[in-house]
Image 1 (spheres, each protein chain N blue to C red):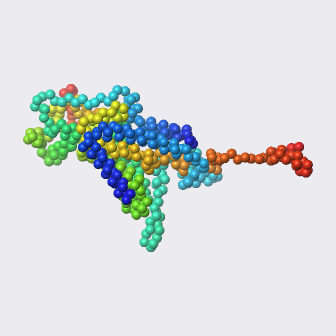
Image 2 (image 1 turned 135 degrees about the vertical axis):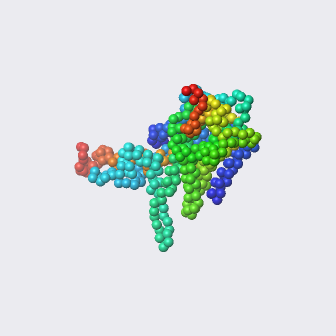
Image 3 (image 1 turned 60 degrees about the vertical axis):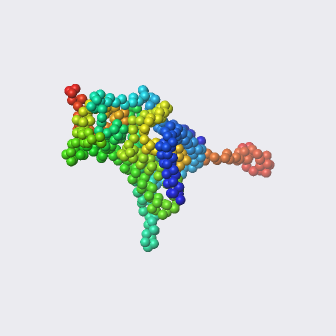
Length: 330
Length: 131
């Protein structure tokens, strides 16, 4: 049901764009208005979400560590897995953001014949996730040949690196293969494991299918159906410089690609894709494990009314004196 | 809001990166010069092997196909849908009409940072004359 819902949503979106551009000729709507609205949703939505998250106090350092914490000088501590300094935390965050350190620890439980419960490491998820995210980043950066004029130096560098194999013409990009393979794996992983399938929601399937749709329309455009990319760049530069133009005859595949990207951008702040911002705000990753070295006061602690002994003595001085009790101050 | 300093720095970095195309376009000077192609003048050079629309989108596929046919099969004659015959040669046929690489090929290729490896082997005839 969840899968059916996600898949039909994607099909409806594709039909919307194809009919809208091909039959109703709404190029301006699909090429200008929807992208702008989507970008507004994306920017405002993400800022809103991050500020909303930042309003939650983190009263205590949640130290889920994977290494020896700093204690006695003769016990060797793990500086990256259980950092107690800001530098260590930055290192841990870099490992997490760039290499998905905690996903690398992923394990799985399997029921083998016997019956015997077997635990083991499961690194395919990590591998596919890493392949997808890096391929996606490189593909986005490669798109700056459409977005910018003059084209920044990193674009030809990435193109040469990515097209290193020089297969076919237009040259096959390694990331184009990687992103499709990785997304396909991530999608079928949810279908073929009954446990995963049981708790996979529409919000798990839909982003994967949407990203796959974006990747495939892009690949179709580059290698098969072809679009007029000079007009595409004219349009992209127009959009980013707030002078939108809609050149004639770009081809429906481009509008489909752009529409799916717009949907992704608009959907982003409401989806699980917000882990992009959330990873930076993970209390278990971004707080140093220094609970035993520094005092962390709960920010919502109510002020406690204290009645010290001196105040007590002042209050009952006369009575205490009369009954002969010893006093600190006469 | 807690840790507002760090959160605001993070949000500013995010906005700066996401809006890179816009502020880059505004700070990098003049607007993008559109490709300005110079087409052959002579009457007998008005007709290409395929329509302009097809060539604009798929000339690289055609060149790739020609290369394979010439190098691997040794065939050199290409017949257009109109029945006209051409030699399958980039240097002689394509560059025979579109003689100025800088004002034809490079216009779009530079605009979109396309670096075809045609020129690893082929020479630009207009460059030869200059030398």
